Image 1 (tube, helix red, strand yellow):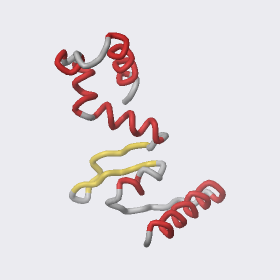
Image 2 (spheres, one colour):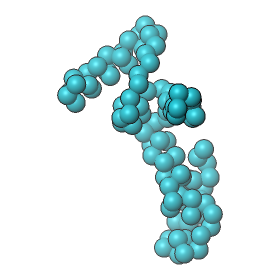
Image 3 (tube, one colour):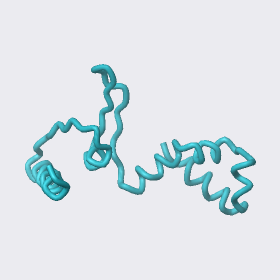
Length: 101
């Protein structure tokens, strides 16, 4: 599908889910499409290796930041990384990242 038609199909699926309780199983390699669902199952070699409930776009971005190299360095207290930030910024980043799973 082109991007416009794809967006229309996803919107229709959301509407049917919310109005009628219809469940859809979508198989995709497109992470942008997967993030529009309520739940993501990641499979490898025919087995579920990870299950994830999708949050708001902000929550998803924050979780991705926490998993990133920079996020992990901040959480680990890496002084070379933390030296880039002021003390208030360091504290705020740690509080933000520590509250994310």
